[in-house]
Image (cartoon, rainbow, N blue to C red; front, top):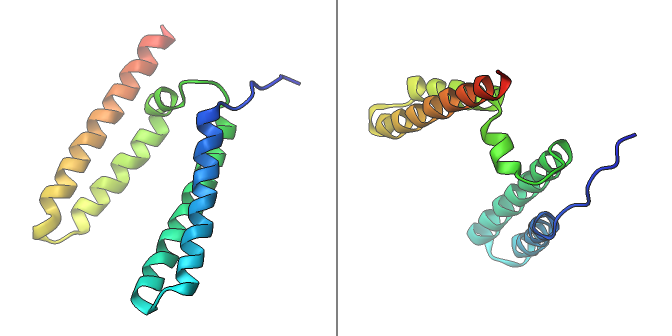
Length: 122
C-alpha cells in the first residue's frame, strides 16, 4: 500500500476553521432571534457542506498543488460548464448577463484543462 504524505498545516487549518464555523453558526442559530437565527443556520449548513467537500478533495488529491490539479481536471471543468449553460438557459433576462459571463469563464476553463491534459499527455 502506498504511503500518503501528511496533510499540510493549511489543509488542517481549513478543516478546523470550517468545523468551528459549524459550531459558531449553529450556536448562533439557537441563540439569535428568528431572522438572524435562520441566516446563522444557513451559514452553519454551508460550513458543513464545505467541510465535507474539502475533506473529500483533500483525500482524493493527496499531494501539494491541489488547486492546479483541480483546474486541470477536465470532467470537473466540463460539469461546471454544463451547469452554467443550463442556468443561463433557465434564467430570466435580468440575470442572463451574469450567467453568460460565468458560462464563458467555464468554457475557457474547460478549453484550458483539455489543452493542458493533451499537452502533458504527449
